[in-house]
Length: 255
Image 1 (cartoon, rainbow, N blue to C red):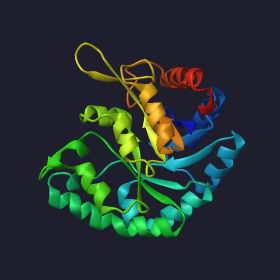
Image 2 (image 1 turned 30 degrees about the vertical axis):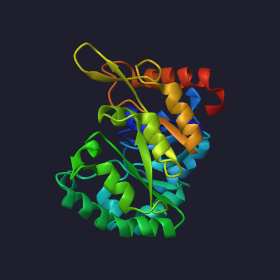
Image 3 (image 1 turned 180 degrees about the horizontal axis):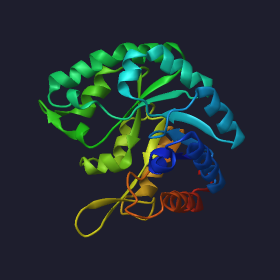
Image 4 (image 1 turned 135 degrees about the horizontal axis):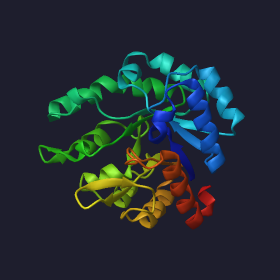
């Protein structure tokens, strides 16, 4: 398992290709060897390939607009193959699929053809959870419907540790539950500011990251991407560096 940087954390610095390239350089200088492309500006896939090579980085995972995954599957696959990205990610279920069991089942019907095409091309479709997937319909949470209705070789999961906790789940247990189909994961810590739960650099919050790391290794996770949705006025680059140093000081093999 290798530690990567989820660029969504640094999205405000990635609004232009110039800013995106500078961000990739800074992330590489921190020690990260992999990035997830999410929340960044539009880019030419060949440019991305060359820029990643320039800074000794890989981008094994993205988050792509779900409508593009569903409706422009072949182009999405070709673009990902250009810069060597095997994991095509959906950042979340569109809102019109979330309100009842029937809508969840329609999401599954609508996205299975894309999942099949992505598998046939030698890539993997990855689903990223938030907290709402822990809502129950007919006594079963949304996440369970997705797990059961997609064969393991059709859909992988980018499990987000923070959102599992926010949904009332145990991140380490869910990693174990998804063993074999959770190639990528989001390392995201949770603290409390006296009023509400907040995001925190890894090991600066209250989540049991030793258990999360152990479960991730056992489950065969390939990449753990550090992410903070909000840094509350702190420098996002500094927050990413703190997270990297905190994890690698405990687990040098993840560097």
